Length: 157
Image (cartoon, rainbow, N blue to C red):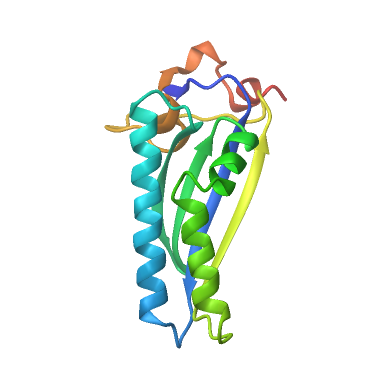
């Protein structure tokens, strides 16, 4: 059995798109292309040392639309990435906003949620996985005994 190897605070960022019944294919395609380009940018930075603070993440398809789960080193890192004109997010956001609010006909909803998880405020267990998932994939795994033998012990309750 394994657990994640992260000891500090972590930011969990969920972001998704919800196509509406009368969705505009152009808007949805732009959102999809933009999100994939941002994810490539973040993964490339992570391979080069991770100056942006992105730890990792994954994509999922839910019953309400596609979403991404991301793990960040700090809220400040996430905010800096989101607001900077030096990276892909802000220009894409401004273009999407202009595309969808000129005529008030946005047909693809977007959403996000941000969680600040303090050190010791999470626990994980990975048993017999061929490939780590979630936070374990983002930061690596370690033997579960290093954190404790029960969920209560690992989360410090």
